[in-house]
Picture 1 (cartoon, rainbow, N blue to C red):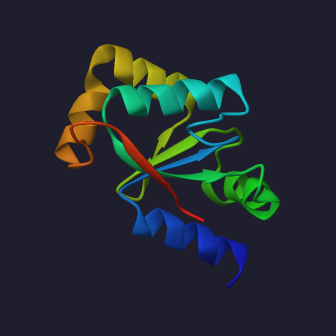
Picture 2: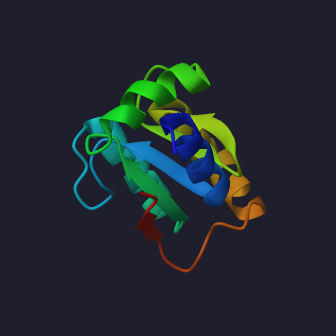
Picture 3: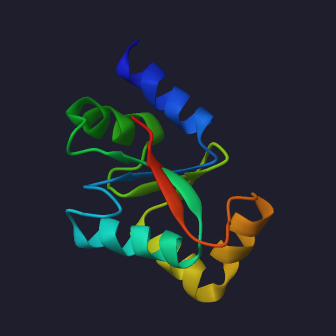
Amino acid sequence: MDTESRIRQQIANHDLLLYMKGTPQFPQCGFSAQVAHILTHCAAKFAYVNILDNPDIRATLPKMMNWPTFPQVYLKGELIGGCDIVTEQFESGELKKMLLEAQVLGEEAAFISAD
């Protein structure tokens, strides 16, 4: 499977997906850490891809989605954005509402690797 097909499959197979540097337990960049913390704080169930372990995804995803930076958050197949947008939506309460409507919230956060 080529990289673009793999990315499309990951996005289609996970209601909430975070492309990040590192993992939620061990983020490797402050922006990725902040987004993972926000999603965890919201008690979201999400999948993640560590782009540091996937250089092909790291190189291809920004071109595919016309979004140059990481992290990138996808909800029900749609790009929400990166750290600034997710943080702004969290602070306004909009993110929690979106996650609730998408039915990706639980009593506590849960995450799995999408690799």
